[in-house]
Length: 91
Image (tube, rainbow, N blue to C red; front, top):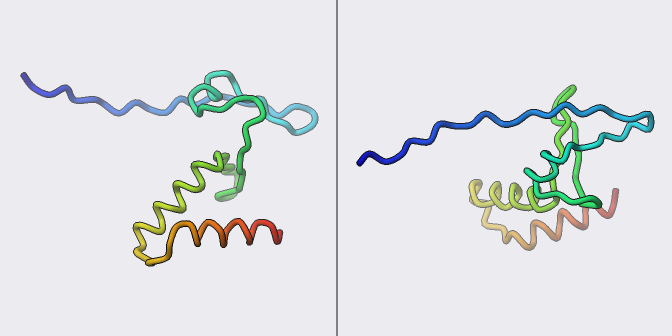
């Protein structure tokens, strides 16, 4: 019996409009797929002109940890995160 080959599934794309106060309303499918609930904390930045990235703090931490591991800097993850937290409080 051959192992099942899974074909990649294209990501779902939802259309979202901003209301008159410039607030987006996320569809229920987005919230469920991302594991978000009303009141969830999110981080947002512009990656390039016209591209807005919205992430959970957990995703940002995981991405930072991954970068540290792949770059082999030798710094402890906790020290890096503490430094980033201190930097964000200065802004």
